[in-house]
Amino acid sequence: MAIYHFSMKPIARSGGRSAVASAAYRAAERLTNQRDGLTNDFTNKQGVEHTEIVLPTGMPAEWAKKRSDLWNLDIASSNLSWFSYRDYSVPRNEPIIAPNETVRNSVLKARLKEQIRQASCVIVPAGMYVNDRFWIQTEIDLALNAFMYPKPIIGIRRRSQQRTPVELERQANVMVNWNSNSLATAIYEVCR
Image: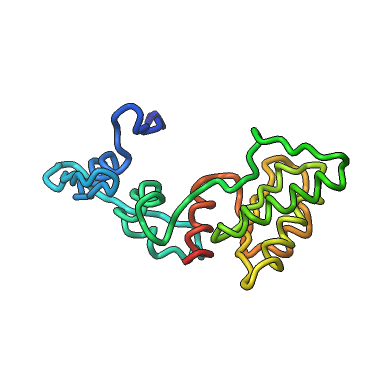
């Protein structure tokens, strides 16, 4: 009788490990880590019968089929010209002091507009605003109407069984689930 065993462990840079080196070892290939420039060459490794990158059906991500591009994606976020990341959220540690709710919302909306102005796309995590659809619609309106060219919108579905706001589903360029792979692919697709 065969016994199946599966073990999954994170490969953390903080521990001195590299996902690129690990992928090169497992596939018996030569891959270069774009972060530090080190080339990991395991082409002489014996015993690797088959390697394959499996993508979801219909996924238009040809870049993900090339092992070096796929495993360097998180590293590329800080090094490639097509991809830059910055959290443009309104800072939580800078409270808005206003005489009333209307003025407070006006100031917050102006700050939000300035943050969106700098972004290539707007990511709207629907699960963050369970009871406040006003801010979801505000982000959508700003992304689509406040600038010369509309900003692409990526909507993130809720993890729970609660329904994602209809206005987000309708107006987002793409809707993704709460996971880094689908979000990274969506960012790549809408911003290239």
